[in-house]
Length: 419
Ligand code: CAO
Image 1 (cartoon, rainbow, N blue to C red):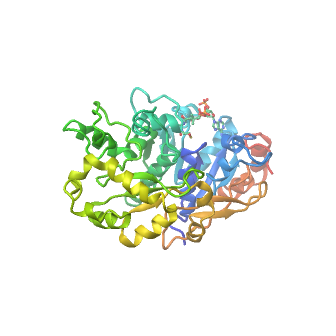
Image 2: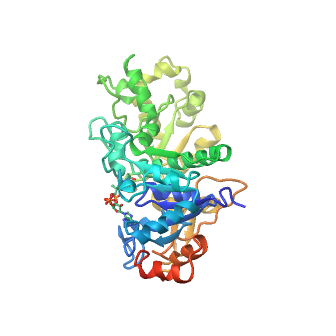
Image 3: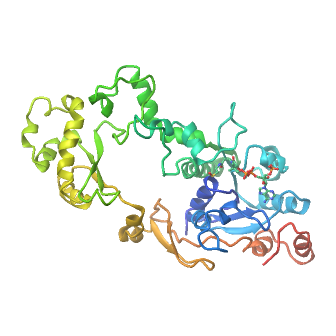
């Protein structure tokens, strides 16, 4: 038994934000039916191709546990099939450009008339307002949501992060909205519209920087390196390099081998509660009682000096040795892991966070499995579907078409070339 068993998702998503949401729903047990344009499919199938002729990793890693039906939702037969899908499904998830669903002839009002229990879940770049009609990709959302202006170093340009907080982050937000709406439907019997804007999701994940914006009005941000360096604060939250975003100062420090290895670094946090242990570990026991160093507040203007001293110690150890030495003392540190190291991490494979998946066109590849673990709802990661792989199966077993009616749909061209 899986948590969302029996729930049917009409997955009208493409690229990254929407597909990450429906993939999660699939991992929780929902039957995810991905609707794709005949002969074309989700654009990511053929983007960043590494194995000629095969679906790209971009596509396969975002579309596990789904079935694919090819369907032209703009011709009459296609529209009638889509209407049947809306009748049969519990949730329609889409992330088209603003207005695209209405232009297809499926407004929220019409959808409610077809199936009042249906939940319509949408991702757009911006919420209602002056930018509501804009098309948006990941990095635009990172910029508009406050992440880029607060990421990077003070003397450098704004930076986007490698974590896809605009796409996958919004997919997560939408997923939560969908299961919440399903829960409410249990009591009311009614569907509703669930919306998640990429700007809003990024801002939600960047909320600590809005916290700092308001603190700035009351005085300098004392935990930022800038404070210790005596550099004046401007009127908006500055970029803080690798300073910790919380109340406990932290930095990225070099470790043994940093000259050759770009990831021979550790994150090091000097939490107040373990300050004395840090002093012992790095060989600076006098700092435990020394005026200006003993109390957290007094150390704030000396963070550069403190971290330079800690780094002198971390540079004598590998990032893993730092972890081994510090962990028994409860000193919060973390090695900077490369993607190569992560992809070879047996512990992550053991928990199912990393999985090996086989694919008929491309062979075996590594993917990220479900990071959310439910003790009563096991996850089996199933390879992504080939384009239109399940067209016939969905038309017949989900929608009940057969005989002449089925023949007519296939010969109309609305569902592409049936395999
Ligand atoms: N049959 C027929 N037509 C189809 C179809 C199907 N099965 N599937 C899609 N289409 C049509 C759409 O109806 C649309 O037609 P109109 O322009 O006539 O309305 C057309 O295909 C293009 O859809 P689109 O505008 O959504 O796609 P795009 O590539 O031009 O834009 C994107 C992509 C992502 C910028 C845009 O969809 C968007 O802003 N989405 C919302 C935000 C979002 O999710 N962004 C994250 C993307 S991942 O970084």
